[in-house]
Length: 446
Image (cartoon, rainbow, N blue to C red; front, side):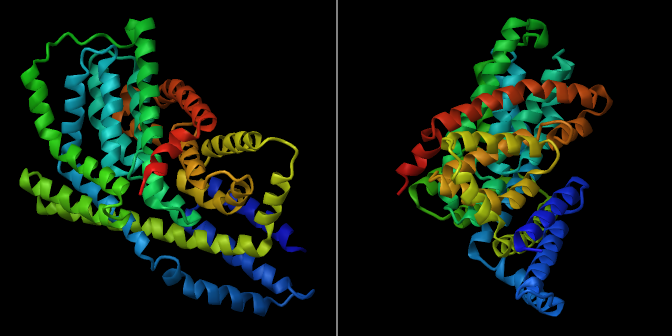
């Protein structure tokens, strides 16, 4: 059996195991280990299993240190910690209240405010799931109590939560940048305009639907005074300043992403302490969640490096890239096919699984087409955002389902997000047709 055949078989087995919900770190590490063993064992025309095992064991022994002992990886726990401090400090409610008061008179004001609140919290947490969970607890019950359509109330928060993957800091962008050897800072900045575009598309779609069918979102009758609006802004000024400092610092090159994460975590902690919003139990909880999630991510990273090495040995990535770039079709057609592939995978697999599984194969194709990896990184994150709300495995929808309980069925939630998936598809077309939406700001960075 040739290395390419082994590569195809192992890749197919990996996909099946991931669909069966086997932990990603276990699947990737085992796939890489078995694949590497078989390929080395078959070298030379015979089958030397001892040589294969020796090579795989040697690589696996070095992997835990070699794959994670990089200064760049410190950015992951720092940004996670910043988000958990903000959550423990209760700033999520302040963010939503400020957005609600300022946007109350807009058609479907609570839904629009939920989108704005999700975008702002996304700029602190870096996690789509955390954004959906935090905003869902406050925004969805209030919209339902005000008579909002169930699908709109739940769909807007499930979709708004996906902004956590695009608006910096983004854990998915960090992983993509590390594995493709791109600048984390440039990728963060590249996500700003697409993130704002996604938010605007959601808002426009919600407002248009509310205009055409007012029964979806009954108007708010309460009168909000200017004093109430100003009071709400005072409660969130610290978080707004924190976001601005991080983005401006990265854009200007004043500090690295790792330094930005450290500064963000420290400032978030000081804001919590200064406002007397966090207890020892809260600090312990934030540190514990950061440790747990960092460990899970690092385990997945180790497995991904194992698969990357196996893929390189099999030659399947190079062969596929050579075949794809040799097709007599324009490059944008291949990008369109990749778009369909990622949206399809997003219906059945998680974001991190899709990214770590496909990067070793897809990136050589993108490079062969001479497309910017920064631009494609933004596109990939957008694909993964759609996967977070696509039936039947849209994780954000399940999170909202756990928040609202029996008030809204899971089927109604999935039905409600279909409008937002349509808005996302329009956004993807714009990002492909106009790459400068993603590349303009990174091109201006020093």
